[in-house]
Length: 117
Image (tube, rainbow, N blue to C red; front, top):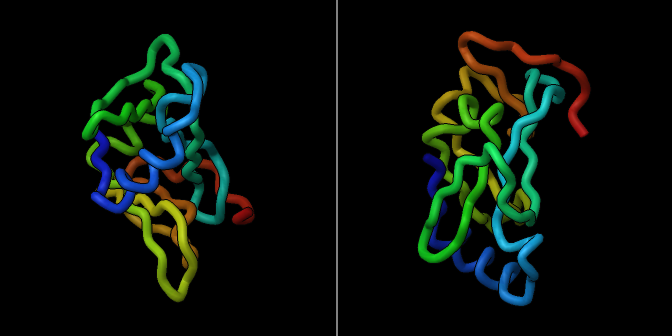
């Protein structure tokens, strides 16, 4: 399961308010890359076959089966501070992260390290 903080819920409700059925959910995914091996991605999307779907305060969060093992138990937060503003993922599966926090690796999978975008 993936959870959302109150601030993430508030921002997502505003973002999804006028979207159609093809963009009615927050998709969280993991792709190879970043200096630690895996990078997070997020998009407004619809539900697809083989997605895990979570309902959080009336919002749909979807994660594809391949990404689920990497983000299960994570929390998505929305922050606005001196470092910037945006969504951030707190991931209990990450054994290490890069300095900017946008890539990670797990204890059992180092992914494909490269440069951070």
